[in-house]
Length: 319
Image 1: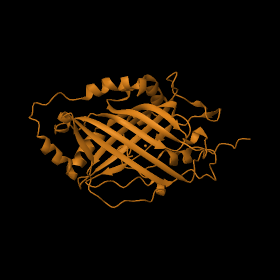
Image 2: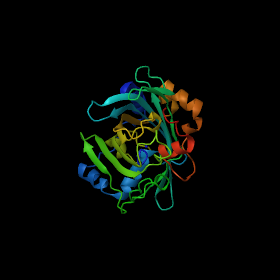
Image 3: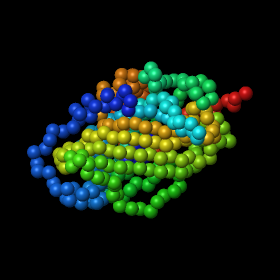
Image 4: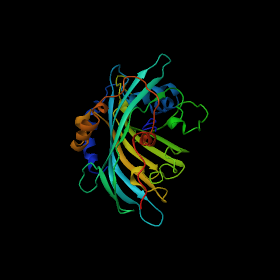
């Protein structure tokens, strides 16, 4: 997932609130800096680097941060209303390690599970209402998904060499804004168009076509007092995440017109105990190592589609 990845809801939202509230630091007794002084920092690439590292993970040596996202996956087709299909749950573990040049290695493991909207249970199979076919649900397990946080924007993910579009190098100046005088908002979006790892000739039922069009849109909310507190090595936050992507490969929609829309709420959390029991159970049973962030940089970083190609087999053609 950028990016969430790159700088990276419903009933589960209630589970976010206690963990997020518990993580917020008490109000600082220091005088608040002026609005103009804070806005000036928004235009400093080094401040952006340091604040992003504190937001993504924890800059204290040896520490890492878990993240949680919950929401709904909808299907979008011409000629009909947007259709909620199933829920999703994301659990991640992120670590940053500062380098000699001041940059940070940002290292991440992330899981995505899908759940039934009626029962709330994690799904292993799903009845596709578009095709009336019961399909096998495939969890997302990305390990690693790494990039470097520096005074310059990181290159877009190359997805194993599939994305060759690299924009010019530019200072790392993110889209910050003051909101209600006590909150800082960060908007962070990415829009990609690159070659699909799922070759339609090999994956006729899984592949939406030769190219992928993917957008991810993040809206972070951070307390102003936390951002201005240099003693906080991690910035507690909540926010909203949306992702536009082709049909998921395990839906077996092939090149059918339409696409998927993820819409969810995210937060940094204290650990596995802060997520719903069904999510924790699946993490502990299937992917226990994902509770802890990576400790060493490993290449390559692949997305869910490249990992799908590596771990799955093409579905038989329908008779």
